[in-house]
Length: 367
Image (cartoon, rainbow, N blue to C red; front, side, top):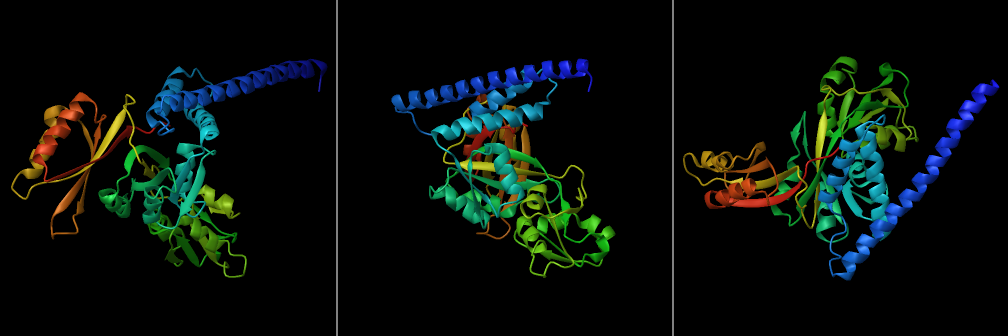
């Protein structure tokens, strides 16, 4: 290495060391400010919920808009989510229930939204995810609600009907499926374990590449990875379809990557807790409604939105389970329930619907 090169690198590295020192000072200054917010709230009897999803969304959007680069917006969002997660944990680490075991896409969604300082609590079923928060054993739940390839997650939608929990956020996670195995050649694969939805998302790839392999549905992709990683001799010829988190947790090599049939395969998760969110400036409102049993009743319900100028982004039907051929409608609209137009639509809907439940208003996902 020449003297000129050594001097040039030493100068830049000195700048990096100086900047790191400034960052360290500023991060701790920010943390002290976050602590003061908690102290001020407590002094005025407003301890309440320390997690404010609307405030977090506003901060992240402002930072993305102000970001001059070269770091991409997604990296800025990741970094500041972790900063906010760490600062929040100084006051109280948030306990987050999600569909386990560890290594699932639900874990990835929970970490993406709440950061690594949150205390993750994996559950064995979506029912248990809801129950953990309803009983007060966790602060928030993260539950899958729909996939761009396979559609709605029925159990989550059914549980939304009866739960007192409110939707206070959403997570949109790009799903990359991988074939994980200790085998080194596709010809050696005899069994493929995965969750039913993941098997369906990779159906055509499996037909082409592993047409003779047995497909075995299990409770989660992480469980599939555990079975494929079994070190007691039962894993011979076995593979799992799962994400990168499961591959890392069970130390399973990726025999094939990104094997999902649809290149834009995405899952949307809901964040649920004892409260929804205040207006953030770019929000959604979710609700469940049913129409009276008469001609044109559903049309009248939908008119409530169009007459108020409110855009509907999702409409999904589910059987009521009480009466044959009667349905509930799950709806997402753009805007917050406190927005004037949305409030008008909801007021009118309350007069026209046979049943109406507001699931919550919350910020549109920021990534």
